[in-house]
Structures are given as structure tokens and as C-alpha cells.
Image 1 (cartoon, rainbow, N blue to C red):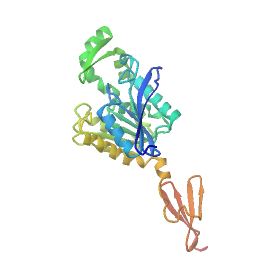
Image 2: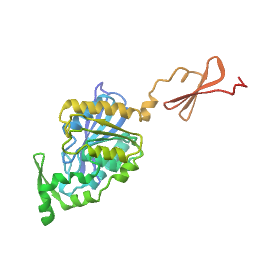
Image 3: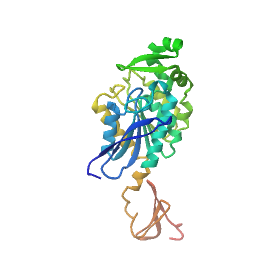
Image 4: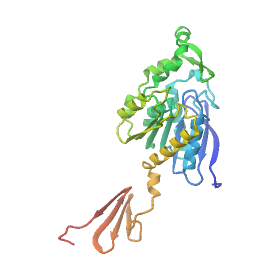
Length: 309
């Protein structure tokens, strides 16, 4: 490596064959893990939240891939032809590219509707061990309130233009229909990955009750972190930094790469240590029958019965 983080601008084929634009930020040295970031609805990989969180995580040793969904940012394709299901397919394509070119993502991160997308897509990324949602809706259909001004035209003509965050977008009825069909309850309940739910109680776009529903539906291991007075888009740098700091520390607990880098405890790893399939067994000085055993982050002692010595 060059002694500092490296950014690579790349493209890869999306689910429908269009070229998706992406940025891969690599840390100085071997990555602790690879993370895949899904941006918010009609945003891009270069949004303030995606950029700041990605860079902060890279500074903490993570490689982070963030990309533009079909028809947004630098990606090709027509946004009007996309829907929630196509977002899921794009995420799966991004994970496939990482798996093929580098290493499959261990951590999935989604902001707003991107959070709902990673929850829905996680089952198709078996290597991922941790999922993080930031200001995410419990159900994808939650975003329909943002599309309310276009509903009459959609009902009459099947498509409409709408202003979102000061930009014009063309949408079609298929987006609404797909949102109505999408249900994340089963995906969350059968996630089988560690989950971190991050949400601000002052979020005026996606009410914090969505975080409660996600958390209540998920099974352990699961965690919730309040983002206090942050806004939905995390426009303040300090909020994005906080998200990355907490996220990085939390995810480390679930990363096998992190465990393999741990320094051995006293008596574990010396010349008298036997390693079998990830289990380390070492003798204990002064106790001829005792053994110190390490299995991942678990430590225990074993000995013969008292009658034996």
C-alpha cells in the first residue's frame, strides 16, 4: 500500500446489465473487513452521509464499497424503470463484484431506504455477519408519503414527474406497486446476522417508531443506538463521524478477521500450544494435567479429576 488510504473508481454490471458506478475506499494495510454501503432514496454514493461514513470507516481499517443505484449518480439506466426490487438486485450485484474481485462484504450498511434494502438483500449475502441500518423505514412503502404529490398523475397516466430534495425525477406506477408488494417483516425476523439499528429521535422523514419496529422484529444479537439530535440525512459532520465510530467498534465484535488478529493470551500461542481447526490448547506451567483452551474469544480451563491429580 502507499501508506495512506486509496480510492478506486470502478464500474460493474448491475442486475439488468446497466453499468453501475462505484467507489471502493481501501485502508492503509490489509482491510479488517469489507463493507457495502447502500445510499438513501434518490441520493448517490457521494451524498454527505455516504462519503463521510465511508471515509471514517476506511480510516478505521475497513474497505468500503459505495455505489450508485441504477439511474442515479454516475450509474447508467433510467431511474423511472427502477423500484425497490431493482435496488435489492443492484445490492446483490455489488456484493458479487466484491466477492469476485476482492472479498465478499462482511458488513452491510444502509441509509434510509438503503437500510430497508440491505435488510431485504442480506439473505443473499451469506458471508455478511453484520447489518447496520441508519434512519431506515420498517417497511419500504413508508416512502410513499414522499411521492404523494405525484399520485394523481400516476393513477391517470401511469407515470409522473416529482420534485425530491430540489431535483426532478420521473417515476412510474411500477414503483408504487412494488413498494406495496414489498414486506420486510420476514427478512428482519429471519436475518440470522448481527443487527445494529441507528436512528435519531428527531428524524422528521422516517419516524423513530420505525427503528422500534425493526428492533422488535429482529432476533438477537441486535443493538440500538440513538443518534440524538441528528437529522435524517446526517448533514452534520459530527453525526456521520459518530455513526462510523460506533459502527466500527460494534462490528468488530462479529468479525472473524478481528478475532484472528487478536494477540494470544498468556499460555496461548507458545511452543507448547497445539492448534486444531481454530481451537488452541496449551499446557499450564506447574499443573501437569491442566490445559488452557481458546476457542475464538472464549477462554476456559480443563483438568483431570481430582483423584488423578
